[in-house]
Length: 544
Image 1 (cartoon, one colour):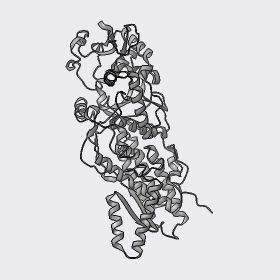
Image 2: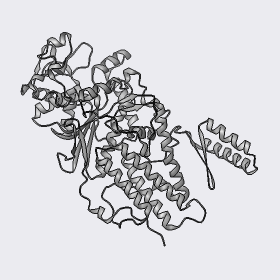
Image 3: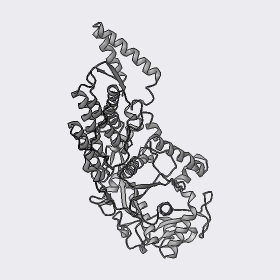
Image 4: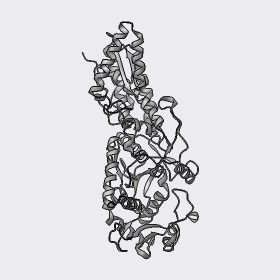
């Protein structure tokens, strides 16, 4: 008679109240309970790229983080709508298109396609809307007109329209900036403003630039008004979470707040989530387990403006030679890059180096080796184990098996850390601990040895693996088989066949006690970054 997999959850877990998720908001400088505008529904707006050059890893940090945020909120029972905008008209696009001798629209299309392909490579398929600024010109014009009608904006010479910062008594509340200390553009533009800190809502057309007709003459929108108009159209006057890199807090997000709240008389977003910026670094930090690097100082903990300035000073970017993301994918698998990003708290700076990503690749091998082990023991693929996609626990008695008790404890800690401001750094540590628990089960019950696979132990292993699959899905890891992370695509039929031959020759050498040849094979494979792992009944190999 078949043995059903035991449950790892207690019966009382079925009656858990709605999870108490807390979100750190840059606006309040504190963690707040997640209380959506509309109960049960969450609207998220994440500022996307200005598509004038190929995206680099810094552009993918926000999408990786908010992909996890949406997955976790959905798992926790919320209906989530996630919007990521595309800025396809801007000074940078105009300058780059002129430099290349092509139309702005052509450049925007090429770079948008590059961004989309990188999202696809990372498995980010949870975004609901990708509004483009140029598709929302009527909404932008209507928004600007409303601000003029309410006395918060004014038309100037040359077809420009500016937001009047002096009319907003709360300007600076997000970033902590003092309006009196702000400086704006100089030259002719400054002469057309009421205040140096006033910013453009609409820019009068210049010869040869893309332009749209408006009540103030032909021109194009300013950067900040685009996001206010698009978030309004798709998420409403007040939505739940506005995200973006810390470098956007000022002036972009500060100006969004000013425009939207002066226009509508209510908050634009309840929670402002700012992720730390990618910093160039040479050091290697250990990933996984209890030794995961501690969270760095977070923006808003002391002086928000100073923190933004400090992180921007070291930020990787196109102007500092950051290579296109597609080039990084030639050396590292998307899963490796995801683990690298998620192994830091999202509010912390992320210290980038290829050596540090290499450490993430090595850490992943612990999981891949276990997946192979699981298949050897059970005859089943890890990737075919069903995934529970709802947080509400299944009916079942409290586990009596010691392994499943530990599995349940790690699951609970994983969920608690994610409840606490989406702390993926701590959540990753629980995944590493969970694999250690499952490996220990296989070792202690000698499940890889012939004649030791009792039904109860196999059921326990499969129940534990189901939890690992459940939690990994929340951070979008281990959803499908991948090649070795340091050499994606290398494990094709040819390489696999050659490695089988080499391993067989080494086994023959060992059987005839020709250990010099066997050791030479292992050593030379190691020089090629191919690692052999001898086990009962055979030898496994990995690249990296």
